[in-house]
Structures are given as structure tokens and as C-alpha cells.
Length: 113
Length: 117
Image 1 (cartoon, rainbow over the protein chains, first blue to last red):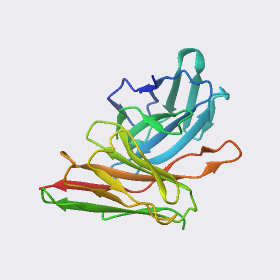
Image 2: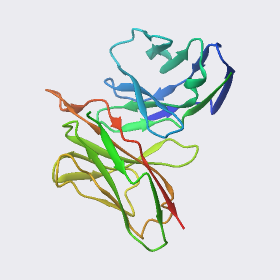
Image 3: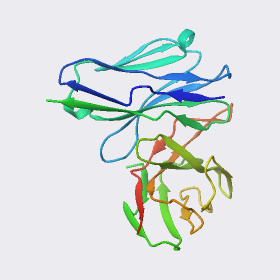
């Protein structure tokens, strides 16, 4: 079975705090892709990152960083020094050999000034 | 600018009516997808198309229909057979990755919010 679990339904932080969004996935495929998308209040899903299963190197992009660990089947997302504009719902997703995207249920992040 | 457009942004339907949601892309992507999002839930795949004149059912295709006559367009019809159509509908597209045939990252449109009155 293929599944993505985002156990954190909602997280609230104050501006400038660091926050980590958890993502745990399940798949038996050896080749797969993991994604993070951001959904602001406007509704459109904005692509943030794509990582393939053979690349466990962590990535940093500005205030965003991602920690991929195959040993724990996790692909966590950290926002450093959060800002109000980071408030959104964040989705983790998995794509395997069928090319279908399997989404988690999302984590709503609220950043208060 | 290249992108995906969906229209209308808001749509109201009376029970028993069919409605069609538009999705257009000018990214020259081969694959297109329709998802449904309900409050507090992730996205669920309705239909997808990897090439023109071909499409496959996703996980929740009952009560929906699609067509793919042009590469740029992938309209979704919500029929009266769909028991609970009130939801947020998102269209996406992606390009194939050669030579594997896998598809690349999916990019999404702004969505259509459908409400049944």
C-alpha cells in the first residue's frame, strides 16, 4: 500500500520561530518521488520541492529546508524564522511507478505576528 | 506567461444539473489531471490524461466525465450522478520525462469552487 501521513493537523507559531512539518510515507517501490506543495488561502497549490528516492541529500532554499531519511521513511520540511506569509496549508505527496500523486491530508500552519 | 487557467473561479449548481469546469494550459505539457479537495482533506484524483484523445479514471471517477480533444484543454463535467459535488476542484499538468516515460512535477491551476444549491 502507498500512503502519506501528515500527523500534524494544525500548527501555530509566532513570527521568527522555526517550525518543522512532518511527513511519513509508505511504499514498496524502490523508485519514487516525494513532493511538498504549499496551498495559501487563495487555494492554488504551489510546488516547493521534488526529491527522488535515490537522493537523500538534504536541501536548503532560503528559509526552507528539507530532511529526507529513507531509514525512517520521512521527508520533513523546516521553515526557519517563520513569517506571516508562510501561513498556509502544506501538503506532502508521493509519486511511484504509476505517476499518480498520493497526497497527505495536509498541515495547516498559522504564523502570528 | 505560461501557466494553467481554470474557470470559473466560483460555480453554483442546482441539484440535477450538469456543469463543466474549464482547464487550459499553455505549458506544452502532455499530461493533465483533475483533483477534488474536500475541507480538511488531501487531494483525490478524479481523472487524468497522458496524451490527447486518451484518459484514465482516477480514484473517484464516478459521477464525472472528461474529454481531451486538444493538448491544451482538459474540461471536467460534473454530472447529476455525482452525489456530493460540492468541493474545490484543481487541475494540474506535467510533462513526460524521457526516456523513462515517467511524468515530471505536476503544476496546478488556481482551482474552481463548486457549490450545489
